[in-house]
Length: 94
Image (cartoon, rainbow, N blue to C red; front, side, top):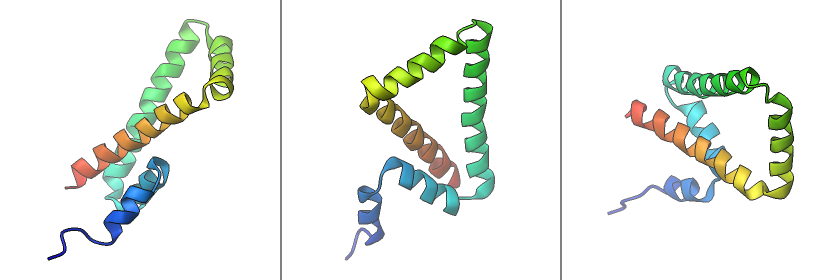
């Protein structure tokens, strides 16, 4: 008896980014789009808070320094967002 499809191995060998786009393309588009919109809403709210505090230049400098000084931390955070969003999409599609 086969418990896992051969495709399960593909899931384990993909990056969170690759997995996100695969799920996004194949999931119910209404759910996928709603989840992506939530991500953009959070980004928009964060940008507004940064602007209200007058921290745009500091933020841009921080982003640049993080990508140079600690790119793995930035990559890990980005991967966490991909994983969280995929989890939200998959949970709603079940």
